[in-house]
Image (cartoon, rainbow, N blue to C red; front, side):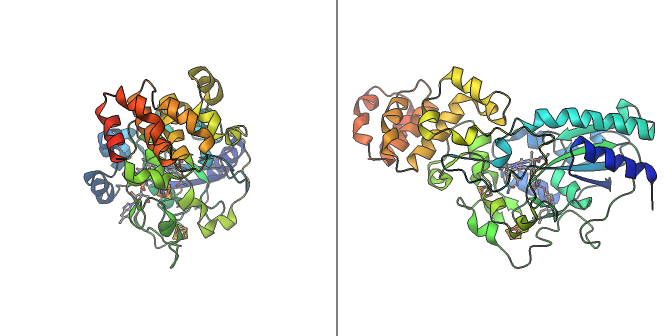
Length: 373
Ligand code: B12
Ligand code: SF4
Ligand code: SF4
């Protein structure tokens, strides 16, 4: 079925900076998978995922009367640029996409209003933070397929799309999924064939099965979402990852179709990968606020960044950072001290901590010392 307005809509959305635009008709979602994932506690401390379960499964609870969903992809592939020092997830080396994509979604809403005679109450848009199973709807709309790495993989852009969505109280002509026989959301690995590179490459064994990430074991969760102590057994696997992880995306052969992003909705922060480990370990609150203002990293707070920097330091062989670590082993926050003690021992500097240890009273930090005896 042809619809002229829909053609105009696609063009306008592309002009606004959305690289992929696909539509799906809303329907009930098979909720078993998400319920099982939550039931097994794989969401860790992300309690908001439990609280929003009903809405995630029933878009009509988010927007009563919604009939369609527009799924949008923003290509953020920066081109092949190797990061020498601490590694940042690629999406994070930009100003916060939550802030830069929202204004474009607002304009997209205005386009919808004009074209379809809608009002502000007839649609709702989200990027990442809404109660929408974005990858499921994106697969349904044919924006790509869900890989064994759980990512929505596009045949035009590989693994490098940020997703956004607009629920609309209008019937739009739905697009086909990448293979027509796809009828639900569970076709994980549809175009993966025998490949299992992502599952094999994960350094912390976070995949409980293909397509299912146990967030508690995922570096992305541990370095971004976890606000407390990173479990000891996962620290080594974190390697050089200071914020997020792209390993299971990077190894995917579908990235041969990746194209450099237009950067219409993203503002690159080329300075971030240049920050050395020593600079990160020496961050002051003032410098942290200045450097990470407007980036997604601001939500980590200085304490989270110092914690992650300690883990990266403990995985390095850079003894030049030992003095900074020894200083952090007396930091006012026990969470930072725990990781600084771990890293200091890993770099062979444990003997220098005897004074810090004598004055230590926190149980978590004392447990870290004991682990090294
Ligand atoms: C919570 C969350 C996380 C958690 C949990 C990740 C996970 N795999 O679920 C953590 C913090 C670990 C995380 C990490 C990352 N995330 Co994240 N995350 C989310 C968030 C907010 C919710 C995802 C969710 O509902 N997870 C629960 C699981 C169960 O659902 P799901 O995998 O998304 O959905 C699928 C299943 O339900 C499946 N399904 C249904 N029935 C069945 C049955 C079976 C048997 C199976 C196997 C599957 C299945 O259908 C859905 C689609 O496939 C979304 C945004 C959103 N609102 O959706 C972003 C999102 C998924 N994340 C995103 C990104 C970019 C990342 C990272 C790459 C960030 C980084 N570089 O560090 C990593 C990648 C990790 C990975 N391989 O998944 C993007 C993904 C874009 C894309 N192209 O796929 C999203 C969509 C944000 C966005 N708006 O762009 N993330
Ligand atoms: S993002 Fe990293 S840690 Fe998480 S599942 Fe992928 S490879 Fe494993
Ligand atoms: S790396 Fe291989 S198995 Fe993993 S998502 Fe890509 S194609 Fe699928």
